[in-house]
Image 1 (cartoon, rainbow, N blue to C red):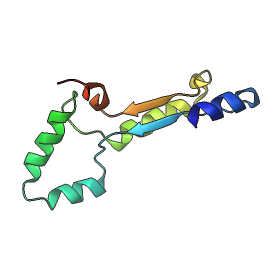
Image 2 (cartoon, rainbow, N blue to C red):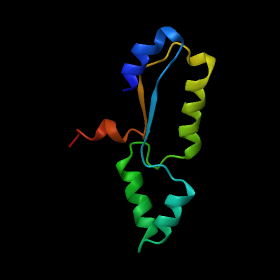
Image 3 (cartoon, one colour):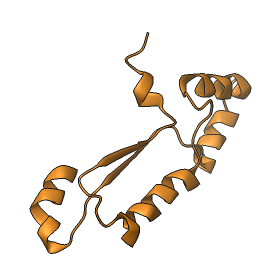
Length: 94
């Protein structure tokens, strides 16, 4: 859909991009994690499954959204951006 909107409405000055966040650590997730039997182990496991070694922050997702909305991104359209600490890039690895 992102690509279709970009193609169909680009000549109207409409850009369409998608942001696909991975495991982000907002307050709601922190409350969930704290209720687990071993929150520290859970956090270690989240770090292990991400190449960057940690979960993401809401501010990191918001920064991409702000950039895509800015004039500096006026030539960017029809793209899907994963903000996932590299998680999806390693799924096909053993």
